[in-house]
Amino acid sequence: VIQVLILIQEASETEKQWEDMDIMSRMGTASQRSLSITKSSRDAILEYKKESFWMVFCPQFRNQKAELKRMHLIFKALREEFILERSLDPSFAPAPHNQRVETDFNFGRYLSLAQAHTLTRIVEVEERTWFLFALSTCAFFGMCLAVGRDIEIIAWLWVGIGWAVLLFNLAFEKHLVHLRNQFIPKKLLYKATDTRRFNSSIKGQGGDGSGPSTENTYLVGSFYGTHGEDLPSWCDVDLDEYRRKRNIFTKCLVGGKPNRQQSLFFMDSFGPSLYFILLQANLVFVGVYAGLHLLTFMPFIFEIYFWPLRVLFVVLAALPIIGISYNKKRLVAALSQVVSIGAYRKPQIVSDVLLETKTGRVVRTFLIIHKMWHTAHNTLAGDAKPAVATPTMNDPLSAESRGDSFSALEQEEVSKSFDALDADHSGAISHQEFRDLLTRLGADLTDDAFMRMVSTLDADGDGEVTKQEFLDWYKAHSAADSMSLHERAKDLFEMFDDDHSGELTIGELKSKIDALGMGFTVDEIGAIVNELDKDRSGTVSEEEFLQLLEKYYPKELSENYDHDE
Image (cartoon, rainbow, N blue to C red):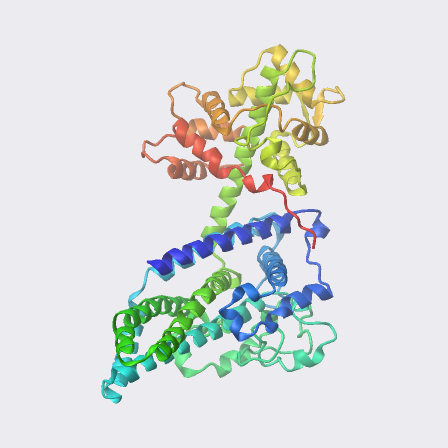
């Protein structure tokens, strides 16, 4: 139970890092979002080799700045390759634009959901894992018989087994990092002049992508392989050679014909399942290891040894647990990445992320429309400036909640809200289009109130609201009132509840979302309602509607990010 709680805590920290990295990766212009390959960038990735063994026990002594930079660069590279979704066969061309996710895909959220799936599989120990552990238990019992059941010897053997598992974990992590690096463009992993390093790693790249290794991947070609520096290393795998040299055990147990990416895994296509079994066994072992020490070996050792040897035994017995615990966060993160990219990408999670993104944009647009509607009711006639009020931290559109910032990413998201409102995609919204939209949404306004609203939007008074005018309005009016999110939810709920039943049906919710033209299907609306409908009534109450706004409003856009690289 303690291990699971620690894993969940560490996973939440990793998820926050990934989602922050995704936000920074999507900020700025297209050229700024693309990978910037510099000497310092490569050095940050190659810094991994400088970590000494003892840093596993003292991670606070690592170069945290370099590690975060390396993680961000690797994240950006994986994200770019994920979006391109290359063919597995030469010439490894990216998928057509209409068959792959958009460049603003939330890859950080995708990895977070993939990690949640990984944790679920790790915690739910399979029968195969118990069988493996039973075989290990029989082997340990044989060792006990071999030493004549001498508890003192067995206790020290048990400590040795703990250290062996720790070393295995370190090797396992190195293997997973090696696998992950095969999905990164080669120009990130090698310095352009360091041909000697590459030549020594043709047979198998190091865990950090920077030196020789025992990894048996079948890479071909010269310094950057046969397909150039812009492609990941898996493209250079000689698949025919791998299949020819594939061992008989893998052929019999796994069968089939693995592709280039699967050939990088131990036992190729069965690799991910095997890795989950190993992590499950690892989780069980740590519990048994600690239990035997606390209940059996340490009481015995404390009886027969004086305090110096007692301390030595406790330290040597505890260090493997500490090392395994510190190592497990990076181990789970690396495993979550390698089993959810390339040939192992998870279409269902991709669909979930796309639905979450669409829902977040709908929620943002609803809140913006409410802001316009509320401004119309609270602006003095003929005055284009909003009434002064004290902003509240509960309002996600307030300047204080946003840190008084308007990032390039937030501007991009608000622009998409404008595009949703621009029904004819002309680049401008006429006064009549605004009137029709508000009518469809149930936001009825008097003529005077409507004209006060559009006067705050249409800065030049030409009868149309351009995207730039819309963005300027959003920035200027983000702190125009002191309403909380709960109050906004109440107003929107009453606006959408056509029959005033106090419940929103799937039909009512879909009609309001359809008014924005964001292409939601009935099934997608049903999935949202099913998630929110705690009482299984088939409808959404006001409280459940508030939960929708709280969950899907993209709050991360309200924070400041220092994304200087």
